[in-house]
Length: 133
Image: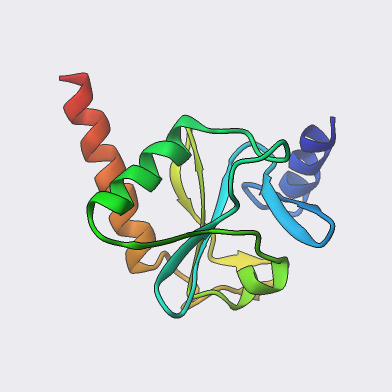
């Protein structure tokens, strides 16, 4: 129920998704997995636990990033870290890799999809097309 209410509140605020927070740390999106890209080019997402659904898109993105030698860190992060990150994105089976360019009125990074987010989206779509053929 909390995810449904968060998604409704996000829509009222003209946002596509909502961050779910527990004990000060982002757990996931209302219907997606949350990621940030730090200014040190580390792709950060929370490790799997009871507070996080093991999404198939999350798993694919982590595998694609590892295959390409991108820096991955599985740890909790705060909303403040997300606001100060170079990039932020959500993953889900329906949105694939969805950039987040602002959060609660604060611009994230350059205010447009960043290079890691764009690259991971391209890689994911290419892999999905390849698998479908």
